[in-house]
Image 1 (cartoon, rainbow, N blue to C red):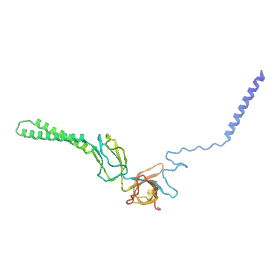
Image 2: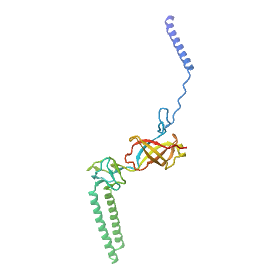
Image 3: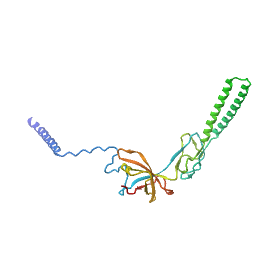
Image 4: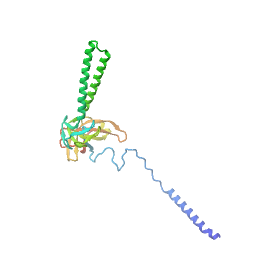
Length: 275
């Protein structure tokens, strides 16, 4: 009976000895230093920081239009006129979208007739009041009806004026969301338009540059899509400094007319040597 217990006991003893040897080895192995937590927005060794620069010290830039607007419908109507397509140019004040406003125009004519009738009633009441044929209450009621008709007419005129959408500036069509004869509701986008002319240059620079960087400072922009260098100048500086990356936004404009440039192009800003 004793011999039957000896084998399990010996196996248990060997297991305890192996656990002890492994614990001793772990205790002698030096512990690896813990990796400190990285604050959000802090660049790592394999990840570029907030400032995108190359080995020559150039700053990454992006070209953008001074104004980019989405034209939307303000009234429910059918699209009657829409001749511009993507890429087409237009001038300030030119008709972009014309909506079918037959119903609104009819309501405007009805409101104009109501104003005429109320005006005639007011004139008649004033004449009768001079003859003491009616009291002051009737005169006041007639004047109130006239004001009500005039307010309704003003509202109808406002709706009719929104039937034709004109260009707020000279530019080009970036995207067309609807087609002619399509019914639209208030808020439906119709066209995405961008202003042509001087393009803006957006970039992120170290905040220490504020010691010498000022509006009006000149620099060059290497446009990747065209492989050419264009002159530019700083227009304004950002309103605040990013506390994590210690950077600030800078906005410039391309100097002069550059017809080959388009919004969305990217490149590198090259600043002259500074102290």
